[in-house]
Length: 249
Image (cartoon, rainbow, N blue to C red):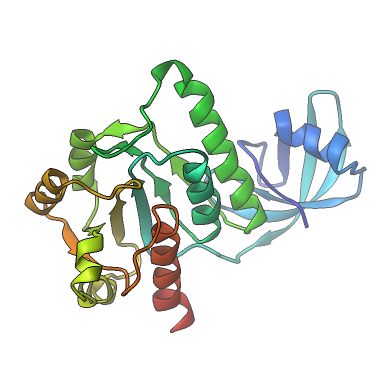
């Protein structure tokens, strides 16, 4: 059943679906009165709804049954990625959303080849947020992860104070055989806790960044014996979080 994140819930009995989602229902899916969809409000409440009215401005969907299912990770995971080349960040956002990430925090790292262009910022952020929304719908999430405006490294350190647990994936730790920090951190986390994980760009984190992270309360961790690409490491981490909190329990 098609899922839509709806900004406007008219009441406990009706949703108003507008904009691109209305277009998708009418022009792409070619739905008609009586067809059913799942609507999710901004608080993450979701309901099976029946299309009751279709106008040029909106679709009115009547609530048939509220759904108590919850597909969210029990902890809030933030993925901070050093700006990578090409469309790798789009891949991280799409697949990371499917795997349960709560927020994505791109940052300009010392070794980032890509330089952030403020002139294109609006369109880039809009595209990234749309990717997250579509991936959240596909994977039956009850929230759409936020993609924040790319920041510099100092701003990332400042924002890190918002999180209870902080890790930085550092390939030298993997080379040295470190295996305990990541797993021991997951064992400490409880439902509702927040975890920020920082990943470098293609060239990895620079030495001065590693020092600053450690000085700001981050623990360095390896992600197994193999060196992972910048677009692979966040997904490996999210898979490990899901396994620990969902499959093992």
